[in-house]
Structures are given as C-alpha cells and as structure tokens.
Length: 135
Figure (tube, rainbow, N blue to C red):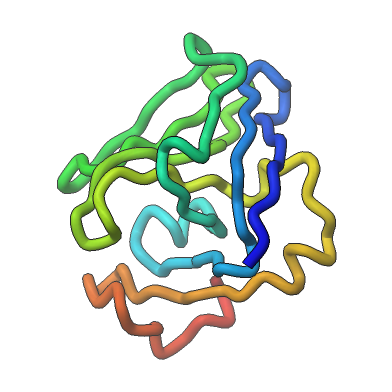
C-alpha cells in the first residue's frame, strides 16, 4: 500500500486539484446509467485526501436519483473531474476522482491498478456484472 500525491485537472486547466491516492488499493468501473454513459473509471478517497486547488466557481454539478452524489464538471470545457457526496454503504463522505483527469500519473500505474466492476445497473453494488468488456 503506497499513497502518492497526484495532480489533476480538467482539459482547459481552470479546475485543478491534488489528491493523495493509493492506486494499488483499487479503482472501480460501474455499469449504472450514469457511469456507463461517461465511461467512468475512478478511485474513491476520503474528503481530507482531496484538495481543490483552483476553479471552485468554474464547477458545474449534476445530481440524479437519491442525490447522494454531486458529479462535478468544468463549466468551460465540460470535463468531469470528480464526484463528491455521502453514501453510507461506502463509508460515508467520499470523493471519487476520475482517473482520466490525473495529470501526473504514469500509464504503468494505471495498468497495474486493480479494477473492481460493480453492478450498479441492478443496485447490486457488491457483485460484478455478467458482462464487463464494454466498461
């Protein structure tokens, strides 16, 4: 287990952040209606491991369903950088960082990172969907 500090940003660099993250602890992909549309690949951390460095006023937010999570995106370039919220089943307060927005990650780190596939489409979060090749 090795926590490392990463910097990340949206495409136009108006939204920037840093996160303390252990990629070897796992990443996730989901087949729910939202994640499958945005091709989500993310890693979850506690809020104290995430620091928004710039762009707070440049962030848009999208919520649906139970409204327990806010999907954050840059109002200028549209890139979804992170999601934050509270979900009891995953330990309460969280920030989920979109791995594609990490600027200082090595490709080899992403290749080596374990991936958990969740069947969110059927609210069966602790089980892998029958098909994952498209995720």
